[in-house]
Image 1 (spheres, rainbow, N blue to C red):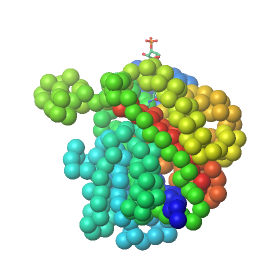
Image 2: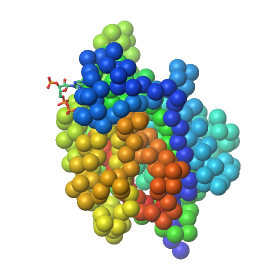
Image 3: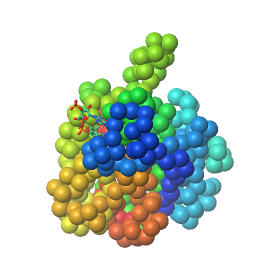
Length: 326
Ligand code: UT7
């Protein structure tokens, strides 16, 4: 008998500190007007100095476990999607495993940048459907503020910190109906962190040249995002045997409101179907989709039985999509 995998519960955590556009006007050559009209962002959250990714991940995870109606002992695997783990290694997932107090279960990170949640969803779904693991705790958490160049107006106005989580487990009805993930490493330099890895280890030079910060060719990434996200959405809708009209809600990776609205328009999805929170939180990389999902469910906007389409695009380059019956 076919095992169905579904989202059993979601949670999220946003740090308390709010950084507004007008505050950024004081530190870089930008304006509230430019940021709002070009990106849709009004403010973003910034984690405290003593708040690492695993701390935010833990809070989102605890909420997801509670909302799933399971005990933490029922979790059989932890996957954390992040590009800003507490330390380059070991994984943030291992930190979460220890902080959550679930002995011995496997845990690892997925490095797929902004597409990390969809990558994790694809993986968790496969594990549940094949019976390999049940109740996979999938977390996407980022402290992008620690790889943000606060002197670079091209990127610092875009990013924020936060965490979202979901428990993926066996469900009676079909839950995760389709997933698809892709990558193109030939375009890795469009969005990346040059130093700190084996190709360019940390040195005085790399620090002096600000090479431990995120670099992005925004215009090129924009072009790729508006090409790849609709394509992968078409792919997952077809796999799920659903038309765009059948979709109750869509959740895009929150990188730019212009990208989100233009793609939604192509599919005929009105604003009421489009879950957007970029105004409040900016781009939190892998965490944008699970944060939006968790909040929309908490508010009762997305309800059990709703058909939700999701799509993400980010560094790698990576991109992916999913169609999920909640
Ligand atoms: O999360 C992973 C995926 N990421 C994305 O999908 C992001 C995709 N890219 C974007 O969202 C947009 O390209 C940005 C928001 C990053 C930039 O918007 P844009 O409309 O593409 O602007 P641009 O890069 O073409 O720059 C236009 C102008 C430039 O000035 P000049 O050269 O025309 O004089 C920039 O220097 O805007 C300038 N600019 C700014 N001005 C005020 C760039 N950043 C700012 C700023 N404030 N913060």
